[in-house]
Image 1: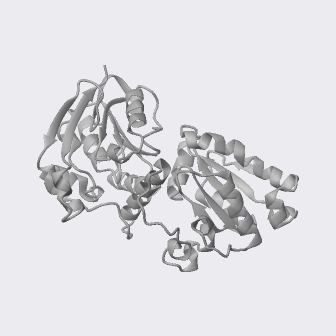
Image 2: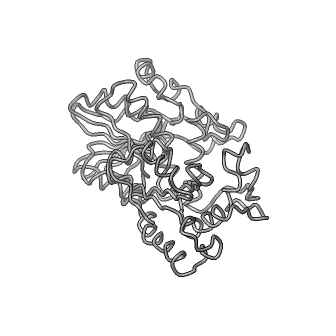
Image 3: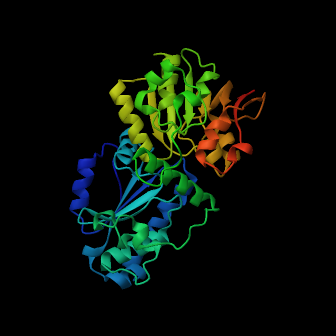
Length: 371
C-alpha cells in the first residue's frame, strides 16, 4: 500500500502509476522538516483501516480495489525527487488525492494530519460530499470543477488574521505563490528596484527575476567575495542569488532556499535561461534549512526573516549552516551593526497606503558575524 518513489522517478512515470490506480494518495515529506517525521509512521495506520475494519473500511467497503495506493515523495532522497516536487508545485509537507489519475483533492497547509488525509480518502472513495461544505472538505470543489476559488464553495467563515504559526506560514506561502503566478491575493506591492537600492547595472542583470518584493538590497553591504558560498533565505524568483553569483564567480556557489514550490520552479527556470551553473534553488523552510552544517560563508535575506513566526529557530539554523567566522545579513546575534534606512519609509508607505505604517516601521541593514 505504501510505496516510496525511487530516486529516478519522473513526472511521466508517476503519472502512469496514478493513472493505473483507482485511488491514490501522494505525500511529499523531507527528513529535515520536523513536521514530516511522525507523518510517515502515522500513514502506516491507514493500512490498518482496511485490514481490521477501521473507519475507512466502514465507508468504502472491503474491496481491495478501493484501497488507496500511497506514494511517498521524499524530497531529500535525491535531487531528482526534489525537482519532481517542484515540477508538481508541491510544497513540503503536502498531499494530493487522485482518482484514476485525476486530482480531486489536496492540502498544502503547513500541518498535514493523518486524520485529514483519512477523511479525504473516505470522501474520495465514497464519492460523497459533506452537507456542511466546510473548508476541511476542500475536495468537494477541486480546481477542475470550474469554481473560481475553493473558498467560495467551502468557506471557513473567518476573515481574521491567523495567529497559529502553521497558519501564518500557510498564508505567507499562498500569498507569495499567488504573487509569482500573478493571481489575486498576492503578498504585497511590487516596489521599484531603484527605490530598493539596486544600481542600474544590477537591475539590468536581474531582469525578470526581480519581483520588487524585498525591502532593500542586501548585496550593497554584504561584502561577498570571490569563491565564497552564499545562502539566501527566502530567495523568491532569484534576484539576489543571481546578483551574488556574479560576485562569487565560478569558484563560488549560491544556494537559494524558499518554502514556496512555485517560487523555486520560477527561479530554476530563470537559472536555466541564464545558463547559471553556480546557483541552485532548494525547496525548504528557513526554520529548517536543507543545508549541511558549516556550509555558508555568508547568509543573506531580503525582508523574509520578519515573516517567520519562529525567528529564534531561524537564527539557530543560520548559526548552524555558517562556517566559523562567516557572517549574515538582515539578522544578527553577535558583533551586530544596525544601520537604519530612513528612505525605507517611502517603501513602507506603499504597502498600506494611507495607514501611516511608515511612521511606526523602518527598515534597517543589519550585519553580524559568527564567532
